Length: 115
Image (cartoon, one colour):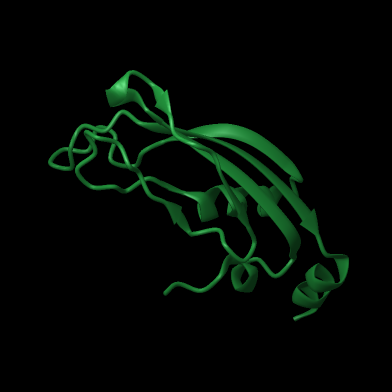
């Protein structure tokens, strides 16, 4: 089991990430949104597309890392499945819509900076 995002992003006190997958191989059907916290968020959100042969999904931790680097508190966006257009990996056309909110902990960030 991979280490929780709480142990990776020490400067983050609270995280809420809502992710909704769109299965474009099935007419753009939206799957039920999933909400993650700092303790439940996976590094990668898997793809469940009917035409996705790899299930790669996308790197949620990569999006969060970019937000932390810029000290962003809110981000809304989308990501395509990492299997999109990869030779030999299937032709996945799914994408994920996400809304992420972060609250930073001043004391945790200061402690990490001081190291």
